[in-house]
Length: 134
Image 1 (tube, helix red, strand yellow):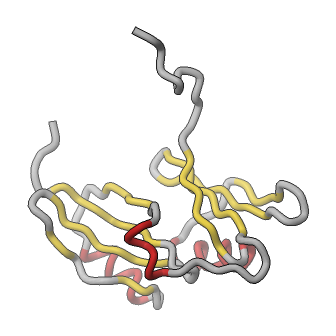
Image 2 (cartoon, one colour; image 1 turned 120 degrees about the vertical axis):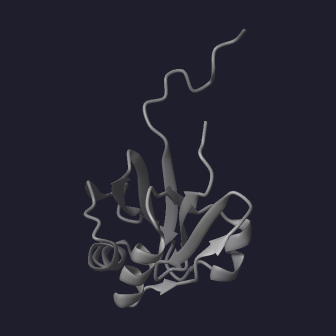
Image 3 (cartoon, helix red, strand yellow; image 1 turned 90 degrees about the vertical axis):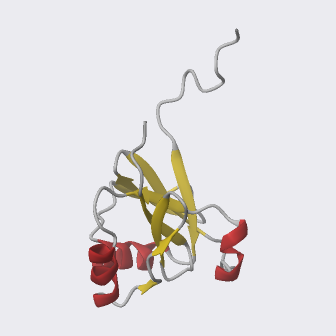
């Protein structure tokens, strides 16, 4: 058996593209209560911010000037899913009270979930299993 290509990995990171990292840091602070663990740049053209959410890393990388994300493409893009332990209606109401674009709570066969979006249309999903997981 060969060893995993990830044998030497130390973390996994989700990267989300935004128009303006500075504006996004402010929005994430004001609306999600998140403080970045690092804000920096990989050269003048590549600002970024890094967050820690439930032991995972989420990074915001600035898009090239003049480019933007298209929210309608979210069904074909990656997004951040956050596994929740409690009811989803409470965080949904909190997001709504802050003016965040958030949908209704939906149910699938085994989960309930709600989507919300940052100003660049990046999707977040709060999800909770309806059945016990092994």
